[in-house]
Length: 247
Image (tube, rainbow, N blue to C red; front, top):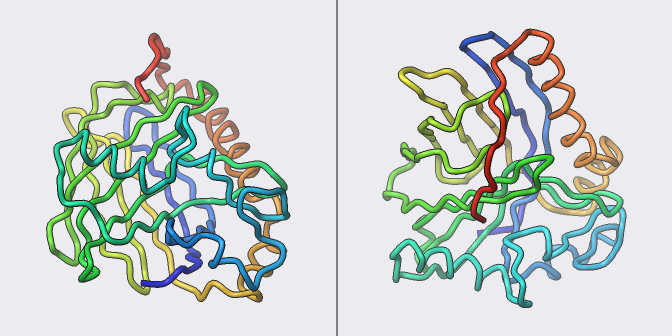
């Protein structure tokens, strides 16, 4: 298992009650949470827990009131869901901070045993503007591609109701990462997918990432509101956020 940079596309396709579709290019980092400083030792413009052009700040991922490691928080969530077999390796797939700013609609935590078999997947979902988080936890069967069914627990979009179920289809990270999600009421009403291709995490690939989009996470946040404007113009049904969601 190695740290890597993954590049590709994310697609959102709203099927009902109003049709709406868009696609964006994205670049995400795949990092061993126990060896974060080593990942950027030869990349001077990426830092851990200090300001830089690109940076990884512990506070942006599974935050805790007490100073704890990401591993500690991942294992805490696993234990809360009744899992006793703790992972040997944990990799996070996420956006980093650009010029000090970070926003992640979702970060994925891939948990492996000592034989590099994927055991669990955690998805840390964030909403805006409420800045709430919910962590979905699921055990993963030993398959190259699997389906995961979940109930919706966090109000993410005011244009989607809460009484939904998620069906995720995902592969084991390799040269590609593929994740798709269907939001199902009586039938699928929304579908999102992401397909990423692995690149070596080195100076040149990281520099290209920076030059290509030096305000990547700012743009992620802007695009959420930009697409929401189109949904509003199309008179897509609006669902108010009536209560705070548990973190």
